[in-house]
Length: 141
Ligand code: ZNH
Image (cartoon, rainbow, N blue to C red; front, top):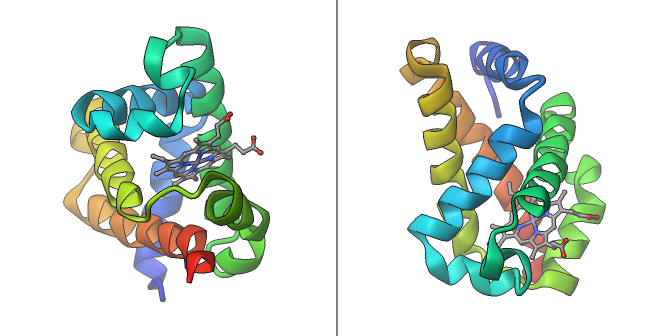
């Protein structure tokens, strides 16, 4: 459960991300592929050539889903159900990769937002994104 304070931190950061979804999202995936090259295996096309347009488009789609999660943070399971089906049944992404993605997400946020991204925001986003990852991976079991 997220506290009122944590919710406020999540919304505050989302407001700072707004308008930069594609950019932040593209950086997120580029960082993941660079720091953890094994993750590229899931993206035969995207991972191999790191085409800017495709990174931006996948980044945009990913951050749009995060935006939906922010909006429905009290009901992630229902809101993300189709996406959970996709990851569990079609893509079969190993759940460990979600932690790596979350780590990279935090670095992207910190590098852009700098001092605006407080330790409390970092902690709230960690909890929130972990909740998203739990929902996206629970249909594996
Ligand atoms: Zn994922 C896809 C989200 C994680 C891999 N994704 C996707 C999409 C989205 C997402 C929105 C699109 C869908 C459609 O189109 O329908 N993801 C997401 C999120 C997360 C994730 C939110 C967290 C948080 N993923 C992930 C990981 C991985 C992945 C970790 C690995 C590494 N995805 C993926 C893939 C895909 C996706 C492979 C497909 C792509 C294409 O296009 O094909």
